[in-house]
Length: 129
Length: 129
Image (cartoon, rainbow over all chains, first blue to last red):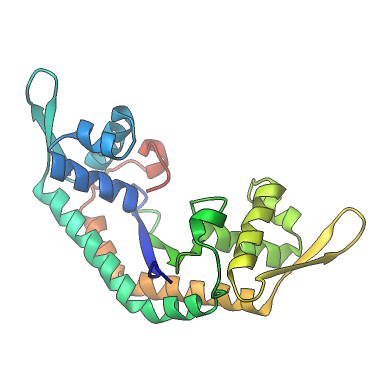
């Protein structure tokens, strides 16, 4: 198979936070761009939706994961905080640990597929699993 | 916290199949009900959507995960096959293994939440993580 089998984690932390690849990617893009606007654009997401996600995370954790400060007149700069980087690093480590622990099971499942199974994007009517 | 932290897995098997809690739940309900129609109804999903998901899984694996056979005039009975039960059991075992392996990390993340963080369903603007 051209694309190796993999897994993604979605965490439900207490009853306050869901954290999965979407929010993790948003935080990573905010860190890379220094801007919620730019991160939202890269994800094809409205600024408002991105801001609501960030606000939701910020309000659920003891300290904000993202800080904003006034920038030029058109933009506010955003930065991932120390706690935000800690959460990102932990998520990535958890993901890697799960991938390693479950590699054999994934290989068994992969061997149960038809060798000629068409790629997922050509046949799967939904993307949510 | 009233609700314990937990995680869910989404698998990308080769490049042919995504398997996560949605399809697993659908298979479980087909097994319990002996009917795609009844399973779809319980999930609030159209019959057509459920059928497309089943057809997609059936076409990707070496053998079908769900078999249908003519029933009464209004319904076709459906059953999860031996391979389908194997896939379900493996997914559940993988989920349990990941939950155990990552319990400490989940507890650390939970301790990083505000003690008074509002429940997720009251604050989270999206459900996809």
